[in-house]
Image 1 (spheres, rainbow, N blue to C red):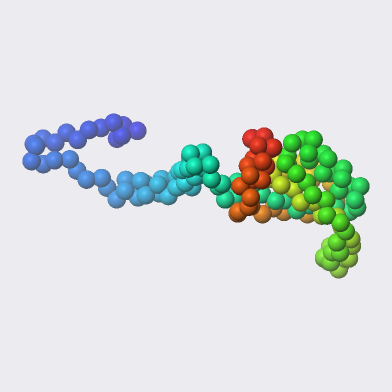
Image 2 (spheres, rainbow, N blue to C red):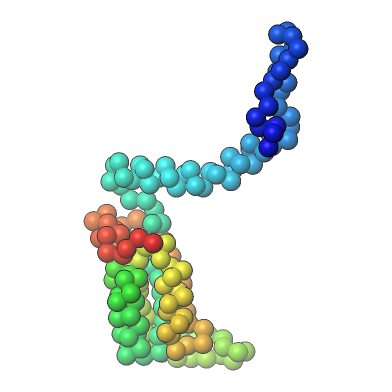
Length: 162
């Protein structure tokens, strides 16, 4: 780290300081590229705070399939009690066809639509897997790109930050 604190000590004023090497320039470019997502996120959050606009992808909808209505209600209530969502819709039975362990299966399922912060999706997924009766429950999510700004703000206010 000494090279960071070294100063150009030219024997004569005419000689000047040496230019940074290619390695230094490469390092600066790589660090800039790695920091871009963080800087962009901070800039969007600052813009959102100042203008009151919505940042695309801040909230998500998670889809969770359940075996029956009682299981769906129990999981929905547990999600709400842990404050992992602002709202959970329980949609009526749907038919599903899928391969499971090499066999074509057909079943009826209840679909949960869970509205939450995108930052809570990992915690939501882990929690649902711990209480869901399926060996491999369907838990997928999509970020919300646009919507009613007042509703999106309500989701944000209803689900505590990490």
